[in-house]
Length: 197
Length: 123
Ligand SMILES: Nc1nc2c(ncn2[C@@H]2O[C@H](COP(=O)(O)OP(=O)(O)OP(=O)(O)O)[C@@H](O)[C@H]2O)c(=O)[nH]1
Ligand SMILES: [Mg+2]
Image (cartoon, each protein chain N blue to C red):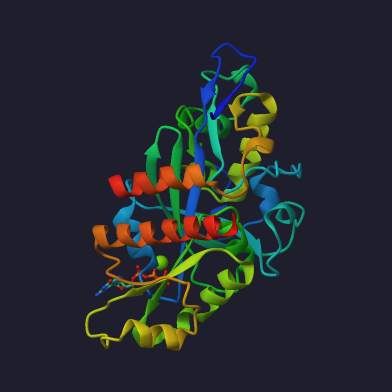
């Protein structure tokens, strides 16, 4: 289903279908930890160049003298099967790089928005971003030690998210727990798709 | 900024790298279909190896198995924009293949989601 015809000897080469999930949330909520706990490879790191004005990649090449800044991305990988590969991207810490968020969200299955109950408000910009764009997301409450044992309903009220948005508790350091979070997101995206059909 | 001195970086330039230096003065547009997760794969051998730079050949080697644009950038430790320029060259030459962009769904359909769900459950 995913091979590319080539005129050269070597014939058809299999080129898998990529899918991605964005792991968003406020500063220090455990985004990198979650990506690491489920990735099959040591998490990778890459950088994009942007000018201070935040112009797109394509424009950067034309800007010869302007100063650029870098935005760092952490990501992991799960090979689903030989034809499908899933990537997990943590959002960059600096919220001002919305250009990068758009690139991350483009074509994504959806987003896991991590929240720390001690600093709920730090995840508000993430929630706003995905809500406005109509991209499926779920809330994962990262249960840091010493954090107040909030009731799920209480967190939902404080975050002011719709009843239809799943809210799950997790420990981002734990692989099984992070897997469960990803499963919840994928199911949520499928449910939304079914509801629209 | 992380970078490899044997590529395009001027150590003294620090974090304020001038993009023109990294693409050797070329301002050719990037292929718009190269996104973070776009899968790229090298042909078994380049048509005209002599015409390729060391950087291009390194990408050819790396992409013997399919990889995303982001992975290529991470493994080569260069910014995404640089890898996109080099990949654009290689695609143009027919040395690297990607899927026909018109056949790439923008959002995953139900079958694909089901496959991903099963896959994640199975890891
Ligand atoms: N107790 C506990 N600690 C956690 C958990 N998840 C992450 N941590 C710790 O919290 C700290 C921040 O985690 P990161 O994964 O770096 O958070 P992040 O969201 O990537 O942070 P930024 O990228 O800086 O915004 C680290 O010291 C983690 O070890 C968790 O579920 N429980
Ligand atoms: Mg992080």
